[in-house]
Length: 247
Image (cartoon, rainbow, N blue to C red):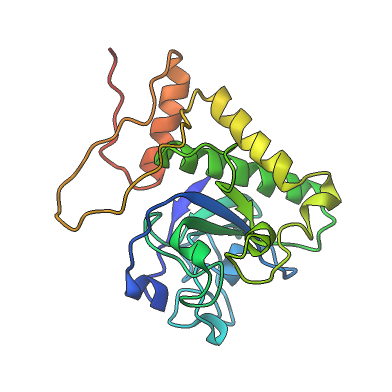
């Protein structure tokens, strides 16, 4: 996973600053033939490339809408695939419905996969894999079980549950390449098992505004390489004081 961070501090959602007690993850795809991250993530950090229309989502109301997700997966300017975190993971997003609509916003992290023309297998496989690794990382971070009912869902599944707006993503894309949300959940579980990442479904609680820090161990590994991989992911997500301690 190529995880980077560019927080949407200018978006009204970020300014609202509501806490999120993470209970799950919602997978979205953008519904537009534009795989470039710069369309949605900005301003240019030297890797994204310049958005000549300046219509990225790091502004009050992107495209005049109350919308904001926790992350995007797509192409950098050099064509490589990356994930950008765009909200703090434990901040309430506006992804399952505009503004305060969509109760899934109260429970789930939401991220978008940038669609292309839906026929490029190489691009799909790359972003699908990136999304699997992102979800495995988040499940480990928040103690979520990817196989548990309702923990990892597509936007269309959220609508079927009555907790999100009426969108069909990513069902419009995944089946074209032999995938579904069921295979996605299974692949996340397999990724966590391979990395020896715990996913017990214990969840998390709403952050306290006290300023106190509570250190959390998110895994114990018998293989040093797996520990180092998790440490790298944690530091990429902003946990700069993460470290490995040998028992």
